[in-house]
Every structure is written in structure tokens, then in C-alpha cells.
Amino acid sequence: MVVVASAVALSGLLVILGHDLFGLPPNLAPTSPPSVMGIAGLALLDLSMLWLWLAAVVAWAWRFAREGELGRSSNGTKPEHPQPSSEGEPEHPLRRIAAIGFAFAVVAALVVACRVLAFESLWKRANWMREATAFFDADHRIVLGQALADFASRGPQWVYAYTWALAGIALVALLHISCRNEPEKRLGPRGADLLLVAAIFAIAVAVRGNAPFAGNAAAVYGLWVPLNMVALYGMVQAGRRWSVLSRVDRKTATHCVVTELSNSAKCEKLLEDARRCRYLLHRLHLVDRGHVKEKKRQRLEKQLDSLHRWRPTGCRDDCLPDPVSVVDVALSWGPRTHWWENGVKAAGWAFIFGILPGLVTAWYDKAYGDKWMFTFSSPTGIPDMVGTFLSCEISFAGAGLVLGALWRVLPGERGPVRAFNLFIAWLVPIGVLAVVKRGIDRTELGLAVLNVVLMLMVLTLTSMWMDTDTFRRERHYKTKRLNLLTSVYQVHGLSGQIAFLVAQLATAVTIWSQIVTASK
Image (cartoon, rainbow, N blue to C red; front, side):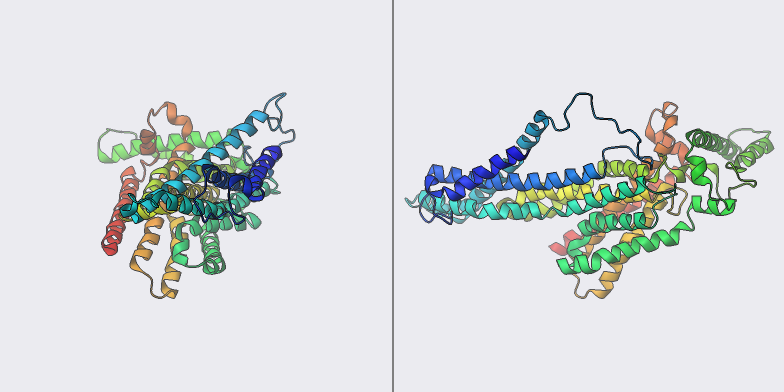
């Protein structure tokens, strides 16, 4: 890869040092109509600069991911004998390097092409009356050459604007390293791990979603980031006491829930008890409604009572508080063994559910109404639209990672309640800033709230899918995930969760209409 990067850098230096070969002045900004060779040289310089910056950013991201072993599954301990990816295959095959280099070249070429298209659109609108004059073509080439020369510095600035994602990747890598080396198994992140989770929440989620609302860079990183970290940290510390597994741990007085459920056989036994408990509760519900003539109601209650007497190994007394059932314990434990794996699972679902909101956000930010003309005429307008969508996806995935990592220490028996706690952690800093900051534009505030509501919708859907993944072994009984969701939520009613989701959608539509009305 060093050889390829050196070749690309030399191609750019050739244009700078050998500007006479291309008929360009020393400052590369032509004052007379450049030749086709000069235009090609400036385009080559733009391509080389973009390629190098893209390669540098991706190389840093890859290094962070590699050092943090983000591509490996983690159960909280280091593997004694890491396995190579494949026998006899070199670590960095030439074919992979060539594919990556070609991908960078394609992206750089598309960005430069968008710059040229934006210039042509703006030029035609500004000079449509001069198209028939003799000086039109000469002036067009001069200004085009100057635009390409200017883009040699503006292009890297555009790439640099998205390097904030590197901080998020580095924090995730540090979190993975830390959780793999933790001395003992825990319900969730504590100490330095919790600090890293709060930092991921502030950098990847809160800053991306509400940085324009916070203000300039000094306000964002001097006030906004610490405020969001404190809000999440405070919410976790306050809610940890009321989480289901913490309440169970306190009753056991031995904190043996993690040890008990980390054993795959005992965890499977709990899931089987939870499935049986749901079945018995459904039967009891039918008896209460009179749909099934059940003469042995006492037998059902006795079976449910026996399931409530859950005793992990080493506990002498029953460990479940009265309002907590084995179903609540199973859902609070989550679909994976380690809290990090729950975070990775939730990040994947949040990324998928965030595709549509990300497209809507990018469209509104760059293409809604008269914004499309500005986007199409901006040097990096179209690439910025793609960058906005990818930034939203990173933000949604980061929020899912935080939700999954804190899954076992957030209060609530069902996933949507845990998602709502992250909503509170995000809403508190916005409320504080809305009180402190004067002269807030209604549209600006509406966009910030809309971002929060869209995030809440993504996290709600993610949490519901996490609940179904907890009982994923029942998928062969339920051919559709919605049927499994209905079975899981039958105690409290799926209709309540759907109503909660519909209320979020109605809120988003209402805020949208208010923003559109205010912008007219």
C-alpha cells in the first residue's frame, strides 16, 4: 500500500513541480485559457489529493479497528490461540490492496466529477446570455481551471470534515480492548468502560445529531460533549438501582446473576423456563377471559409459582422480587453472553433501522425545497449528501451500541423502556441548552427535536428486535418475527408497544409540519 500511495503522491507532485509541462503558472491558477493538458493536470492533482486523504482516513480507521480487534467476537476474555483468517493466505494480499486502491480512485473521481458538474451548472446559470459570444469558451476554461486548482485544497478540507468518525472508532476500539481485559464479569460497563460508553454516546450520537444546535466548535467540544457525557452517566447511575438484574442481585446478596447466566447450559434453562412461563401466563389469561374452560386454575398458578422460585447456584433463598418474572430476567439479560456482544448486536439492528431515517434526514438537509439548487451548485454538495447519510448511519449504529452495552443496567422490563431512557439522556442536554441559549430559532430547535424523535424510533425498533433475538431459538416455532414479538409481549400487550411507536411517528410528523410552516 505504501508503494501505491507513493505513486499517487508522485503523480500529484508532478503537476506541482512540473507545471510548465502542463502549461500552468507556478500557482497553478490559470489566468489565460489552459490547454486540455492543463485541465487534465489539474484534475489529476485533485484526484491524487483526494486519494491520499481518503487512504489516510481509512488507514487510521483500519488501524484502530485492528488494534481493538473489532472484527472478532468477544466474550470478555482474550483467546489463547488466535486463528489466522485462512491458511497460507498473506495478511495483506496484493489483490485486496488493488481493490481498495481502485475503490479510492473511483470515489475520488466521482467527487471531482461532482465538482465539475456543480461548476457547469453554476456557470450556465450565471452566463446563459453570453453563450453565443466568442469569449465564452475562453473565459469558461479559465474559470474551470481556477475552480479545479482551488479544489486541490478544498477537497481535502471536505474529507477532513468527516474525520470526527475516527474518534468514535477509536473509542469503540478502546472499549473493546478494555472489556476483553476486565478482571471479572459484570452486568454492564463500569468505571473506565462506562466513561468510554459515555464518550461514544457524546461523540458519535449527540454531537452528530445536535452539533448545529449547540453552536460553534468551542461550544460543541467545551460544553456539549461533557454535558451529554454527564447526562448519560447520571442516567445510568440513577437507573442502575432500578434495573431488573440489579434488583435480583440485591435480593440474592451474592451478585451471582452474571455467574449463573454466563453458563450457556444454565442460560438455556432460564430461557426454557421463560418460554414456559409465557405459555402458562397465556393460558391463565384465557381462563380469566373465559375463552378456555380451565377447571384446574390452581394448577396453573402453582406451576407459575414454581417458576418464580428461581435460585441460581449458591443461593439459598428465592432470588426473584415479587414483580419480576423469569421472562423479565431473560429479556434483561439480552440475546448474547457478554454486554459487549449485546452492544454489537444492537448496533447492527440500529444501522439497518436507521437507513430510512438517514435517507430522509439527508434529503431534507440537502435536497428539500430550494436546498437542491444550492446543493447541486456547491463544490461538494452531492458528496455532502452522501456524507450526511453515512454520518446518520454511524450515529444510529453508535446509539445502538450504547443501548446494547447498557442493556442490563437500564431500568425497564421491556426493550422500548430502555430505549426511552436513552431518549431522556439525550433530551436533558437539549433542554438545558434551550434554557441557557437565547434567541433560539424555532426551526433550529424543531430540527434538533426531530433528530431526537427519529433516534428514539430507531432505538425503539432496535430494542424490540433485541427482545425477539433473546428468544431466537423459538423462531422455528414462529415463522415470522412479528409472531414471536407478539408471543414475547403477550403479558403487557403488543398493542402498547405499537401505540408507543405510533406516538413517536405522529410526533415526528407534527414536528416536520411545524418546521415546514416556519420555513415558509
